Length: 102
Image (tube, rainbow, N blue to C red; front, side, top):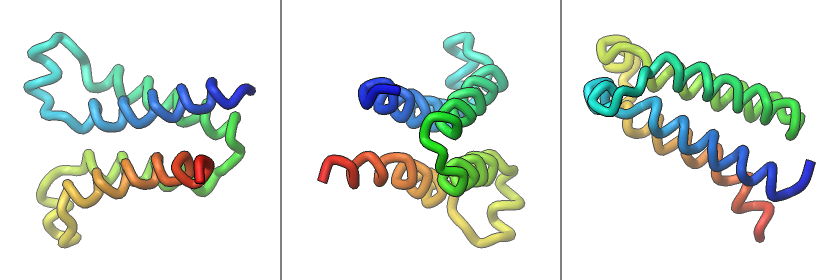
């Protein structure tokens, strides 16, 4: 798989991760179903798993996406802010890419 294809997959994964976590009202305003986005994100993550062969990174991304989408009460019980999880998710996706460029 070429480098460009891998970068496109990382960009799509990052984009889907952010869009899935947008307000559900905003998504429905544009006629987008959040469940379909979650399925697409899972498909791209599985594709990334096959392409990159980095199981730990993929499991971490899946765990963060699930954690971000938990109900507010559960996240409050853990004492974690949803915004911190989103920033962590973006960092986990972008840091290997930045490391490759340096």
